[in-house]
Every structure is written in C-alpha cells, then in structure tokens.
Amino acid sequence: MSSDARFNRPAPAPLPPAQQREFDELVRKANEATEHPDMRPPLQPEFEGDVNPLTGEKGGPKREPVRQWVPDGGDWSHKGRVSDF
Image (tube, rainbow, N blue to C red; front, side):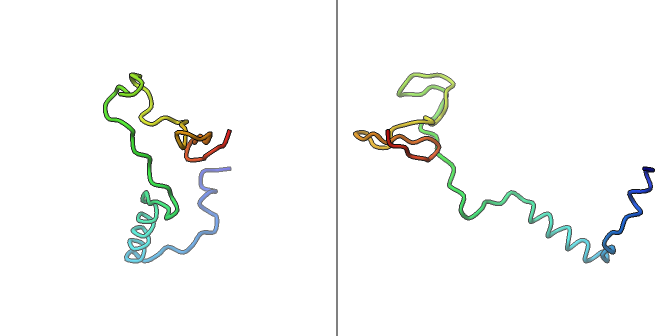
C-alpha cells in the first residue's frame, strides 16, 4: 500500500474554521479527567509521614489493605469489600 492510499478513503467533510474550533473545544472538555458520579471517594491515609505509628513499619502502605471491619466480629475488608470468615 502506498503512503498516499490512506488519504484516498472517504472522510467527513471538513468543518468551517469557527465550527472546527468549537468542536475541538468540546472534545478537549470531554477528554479532561472527569469523575464518574458513582465513583467512590479516594481513601484517606491513616497516618502522615514515612513510619506507621502503630506498627513501626517504615515505607509501608498508608492504609492497611486488609483489616477487620468491626473489632469484635469476624468481618474483614479488602479494597472496600467485606468478607465474613
């Protein structure tokens, strides 16, 4: 296939300059990082700094990925999902 063959395909008619600018602006706005209305809020870190004050772990996660949902029960959560063991 020659390099000019890709330009010989059918394509939409070009827009007038004013409409093209409007179209480009609408596409740019649509592509901006927007949050979905159903998106969960981001998890907040459990502590500040590099050292976990409860465990003394240095450089570990700011939130424990698996933890007990209620202190006296058997429910545990991982990434927001709760399991009963």
